[in-house]
Amino acid sequence: MSEERSLNFLEEIVEADLASGKSTQIHSRFPPEPNGYLHIGHAKSICLNFGLADAYGGKTNLRFDDTNPATEETEYVESIKADVRWLGFEWEEEHYASDYFGQLYAYAVALIEKGLAYVDDLSAEEIAATKGTPTEPGKPSPFRNRSIEENLRLFAEMKAGAYTDGEKVLRAKIDLASPNMHMRDPIMYRIKKTAHHRTGNDWCIYPMYDFAHGQSDSLERISHSICTLEFEVHRPLYTWYIEQLGIFPSRQFEFARLNLTYTVMSKRKLLQLVQEELVDGWDDPRMPTLSGLRRRGYTPASIRHFCDRIGVQRRENIIDVGLLEFCIREDLNASALRRMAVLDPIKLVITNYPEGQSELLPAENNPEWEDNGGYRDLHFSRNLWIEAEDFMEVPAKKWFRLAPGTQVRLKNAYIVTCTGCVKDDYGKVIEVHCEYIPESKSGQDSSGIHVKGTIHWISIDESIDAEVRLYDRLFQVENPSHEEGDFTSYINPSSLTVISDAKLEASLGSAQQGEHFQFIRKGYFTIDSKHAAEGKLVFNRTVTLKDTWSKESKKG
Ligand code: ATP
Ligand code: MG
Image (cartoon, rainbow, N blue to C red):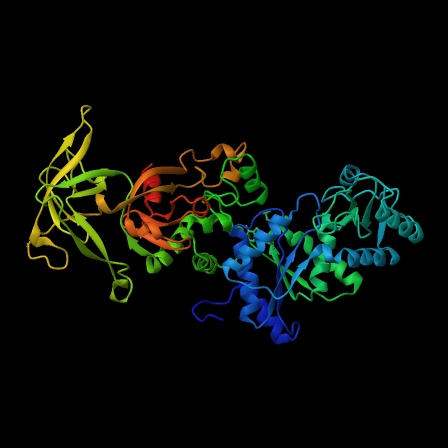
């Protein structure tokens, strides 16, 4: 276990279980339902399950919880496997709850034979309506006391397809007066004449979550079955099935799910965003999905560090999305190559630098590395691109960038003195003019001049064009799921800014997918995988250099 932090409550449980001999091996599982892409909340569960097993010499299974034929697809199975591997984890065994359909059916028969389950002809609505309230017991169904023989026959007929959807269900016979509503004769099986993505039309009855999950855990000899807090009330039922069947005693433990500010996390809502084309698919760089974060430029390490930092709690909370951004910034600051890119170009002419002349100036690849990560050569000449916002004809107070009469340093190059600008017929500035100071060359500056501002630039002759995409939070409110009305009405209309004519350092033309760059003063960027596949050079901004957003929001 890492020594810097104290144990979380699950580690304490595991250590106690190992010490008492209650567990001899730690065996966890990650059990996604293949009805959508994994999101950052799942990453918390993955890191927790795999991390716990790793820490105590155990193992972790990947189990697809595919008991609902209507919503599941093979595309999701494949994406889930790719995402777990990308995060850096490898599972011990791969399972599908649907592989257990035969065994689960046998378990159901065993409960009928023990007089602990019955076929009910009431509809789902009637069952819900007769369940009572937490303070009032439920009403027994008129079919509750069917004989074991009749129940066995009817259940076999359900399986054989003799009835239509909803005509009959199998219920556990537990306690209609239980203070826990989940124990009031819960449904075990329902009829659904829908093809399943793996078992096809083999089955027309499907087990409910509660009748599949614990038994699947037990079949895989899972010691610690970890799930989110909303399943706490299901735990007595989880344990009841296992005890009545007398099978391997897996145990369930609950932790608080991850909630992030300015983010929706439920797969149903993410699916809605995709289906209504409010985003560019599950991997839209604004989505909290792992595929979206990957396309945005998040690294697996940054997500694992984030999961470490947030820890594991037993109480619902909401984490500031700024912490996730902090984690990727920290990672990329250490690893990303520094490059120059001008996102909103305006021409800078160095009037005392001769036409046709040029020179190569060394620039560090990453000042965080030993020897600055080596140097690349920047092409310097008379005509450069700079950011339009780095020039003001009438400067504001405390303006340290270009304005007539001011001096700035061109990063890795010279100090220049601004001499004026050229405007078009409409009064728009189209060129900025400067004179450079030859003795002020970076690294060998003997000018004795001190300037407060440094700006980035690119030689016009050696720049390439690219599209650059800037992202802001997808939602305008902190907790879109808790606002009135449909959450989609809180989408931030300016969450995507497309810059079609950015000017980049020529070396970025050969950037590869998966590489990360710091565009000096502009943030961290990566190649957009989707457009790369189409042969188009598009960079996504992963994150800004500083948290400008929270400062602005505080300003109001
Ligand atoms: P959603 O509500 O987003 O559809 P889910 O819980 O239905 O999520 P599953 O595919 O069933 O999604 O989840 C697989 C595992 O991931 C479960 O163990 C679940 O508890 C866990 N998980 C899902 N969402 C979160 C979250 N936000 N934080 C932590 N764990 C989560
Ligand atoms: Mg689920």
